[in-house]
Image (cartoon, rainbow, N blue to C red; front, side, top):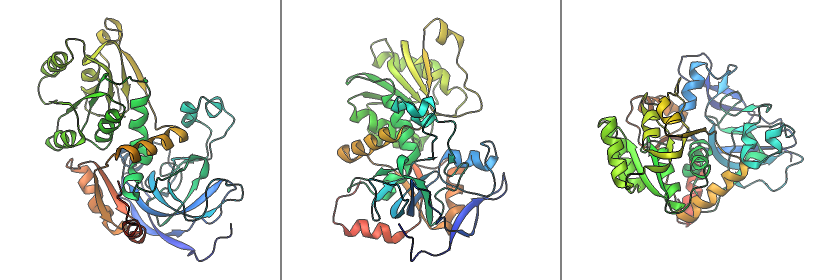
Length: 368
């Protein structure tokens, strides 16, 4: 599709020097679409923990790089081979750009396809992301948004939602199972609670911040424990609630040094812990692995089809994403300060295009 009526340049927030703040500057609009590309007008871009890892220079990023790997917007142009998308579609973007399509992970199963090690990059990490007015994305990784799902909900779901959704479904839990989420009141944790409830699970939320405990309650956890109590107290309370067995599964989304030990200890013997948080080291006490046979799995985002399934669940169950909205790249500094100050409730987002938000409001639909 020919690209017309689009400016040649745009504003973008880029990492131009490691260990330094993003710099807002004028950059070219990526009009050179490959056959399977979409060009979107970004509506909302979200900040993630990974953005700070990019700033630190630990993810192999070549500079300059436009930040944010969580974005949603409207398609304004399509590549020559794109099927299933057209201008005007509202989409949640995928992180991966041009997976190879031929490696063992790409060939399946579907739930491993996001592990392609031969892609052309990861948007906002090693390729331009969504802290920009326009973004070029891969149609194969994008997901059409249900009519009632807002841009402000969809953008954080592109990574945070996809990541914790896969954590919930990875172990194929059954309705009625107990699941614990360590770090339950953060951006991923409060979504994990709602996803688990949508699957019919009973949820124990564990957090160590007042803001996190408040978010855990609002998200609907069945039982809430304060991790600031001693390790033994938290474990004993979980045992009491679960009739002495522990939970069937635990998802750890906390970077705290003892979070993994807590995650293992509250999990029943032979149970599974899914590690999602990314501290420098993940420390598992040997007793948990050997004496109790706790199985530990890592998990990374989710496949494109799993992302589309997640959006259907968000629509059906009216999953809410608690966001802290900032308006335009001029407020980038305030967003980062809130995140670094430890007082963030949920996810921080930047409204990149208020006109798209206004159009949603004018639709008359009850948006989630």
